[in-house]
Length: 395
Length: 145
Image (cartoon, rainbow over all chains, first blue to last red; front, side, top):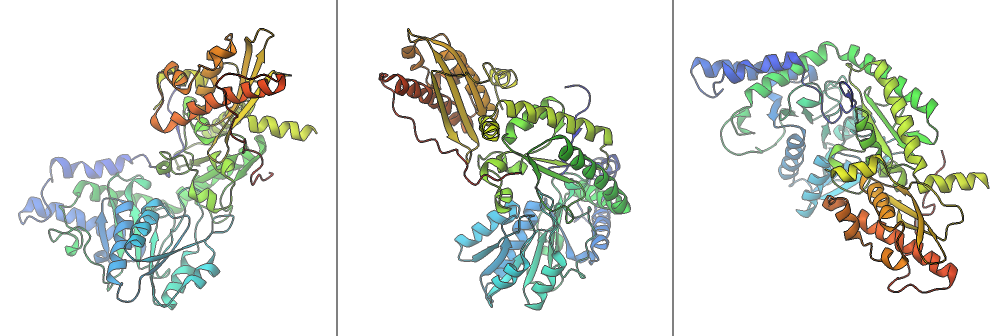
């Protein structure tokens, strides 16, 4: 591999912005106090935490005391679902979610199912958009929670969150959204969208890893998730990750300063790459919706080739991408998201996700499309499925 | 994740291709699981495998095990080829990650399937060879685009 890699896996994680690292450093070395301590060193740390909380609240149209810092998106999802299920059990034990949620939501739902809760997994259409009619029909008198992701991590589909929020409000049901891929990429307003809980993660928008937050609307009966000290208003014990929180706040500030500008840049890169692939490579399909799509997401299935082979060969050419969700790579089953939008197994196995950032260049898109063309061609030459296909064509 | 040998056989696979009018062809695996292997054998009148080619749809390990399996049976007698087990393929590749062991099994099955095809065509019986499992890769939910 020559030179720097072309990094196209920003949905897996992003590079921490230098400004973010700079904002974090003093809280390791100088302002290392515990925010709960009363001397000045502690207050400085506390101030950093409060400042970040205010920044984040303002980006969502929320109050500062509605933001709870967590160790990331998975913790926020776990907390939202388990605590809401427990708190609202007297009202009912039915939860509605979608078939294409992140495993942090799906596996938490399975956990709840084993504990006597019922979960309805609503279908999505062929573009990966939750079927609102199905969601409406799934609502029952004992439904306590709807959890639908803001935007999908694999195929980038943006869900009709405002409509789902309105539906939930109309029926007096709590609405949680996993906004890990959407927060700091898209404008979100918790009141206008009737969102009661929202999960986000720092490292998806050039912040540090290991820090995220859960927004919890004032008045919800959500119990504490980690028991111990009085941090996070008694709802999430443990000494605050002060450098992480400072970095998270700074990353949010940077992202929202350039929200439209970055999205515009990403969209141009995305559409250029899509156009190139479509023009250059036969027998492929774009997964996800063309319009309701995250500005950074490209997801293709290439028939007759398998995703891992594709990834390794691209890696050798210095291109970082993923096949399905990074979390799925340990298992042999193709992605649940691609199966939910109706792809046959063999096509789902041949998927490639590329997620750009505003730092990528058009030249990198050219090189990427060229590398994919070469690699897919090489793998097809090796593929018995392609051989059969070509023989059938000749008949 | 992969040994150097696996990476080598993945990057420079040996014996990729087809053999026209092959003595035996075997296809195993299932696109649902993400692996299909096809092995072509050219066997001469003395029962020696003169040539062996493969085509594989699958992960890096699937390609590497196919490549190694063809190397191991080339120039061998049928009897010797029957001794090329999945373990032999794995050892020759300096091991595979646990989740990829099934790829080496597939390679063994593919050779057996090709030998079975040869035996059927020539009306002979090969000691220890069992009928391969039905090939189920064809056209399940195929869509055109």
